[in-house]
Image (cartoon, rainbow, N blue to C red):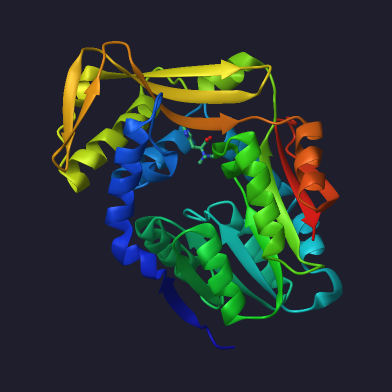
Length: 327
Ligand code: AVJ
């Protein structure tokens, strides 16, 4: 069998620095100030996120890994239904450490599929590429570097096979609830009837456990947030004094929103690509939401975007859920 390996980047990638600059200036001119967490993932950010996933407090990855390691057969049998060839598209694939188990299982079961990982970080995609070459040398893989929907459309132009889309890790939690709903509607529009989506949701649970996962005593999550200021310094000629900002994390058990902020410790002026931005002492920059869900929240999302829930698989602690939606 042929191992077709191609890397596609979106055209926008060439202009991505302009986009980054626009989004940063735009966000810092808003009230309250806001930076987008999708920009966390440069090379340093990727490596800090790897450290986060290895922290004892950050249970999410271990819980979903429990599902992918111990319920692989269940996952695979739904994806392989009726044995027709398919494209396995992963949104925000990262280093594919969880999906690796599924891919290996699908290969062993002689499933006819092409793996299409999509990620915004070219750096992590080269890590993924190496990892998969070593572990599954005969895997058909098409790598797509760029934004989710542009790359999903690209995937549709490349192939007309049925699609199974993975959106794991509670990545969906990085969107405000209304935005997540718009996202799922848009996702549904890009799929055909009979296509399948597997979405990972971090569930509402003991609020202390959730807050601790994002407020680690070693300050790795703080460094992960502060790295975006450093990235702005590196790539956009910014002059943030990172020591003048402090990470603050909050979890609201009623809404399920876990949010991170950077607090300005002084009145200060920062220049980014020759544009000046003022920060008042104690002013916050809103950085990221990591939304937590009840099973009712999950179902609401599915129904409002035209999907039908066909199965939900949880880890042994019942802290995390991977749910299958049928388009
Ligand atoms: C990669 C979006 C799932 O929100 O839990 C980890 C990112 N931020 N610690 C999350 C993150 C702070 C993570 N996701």
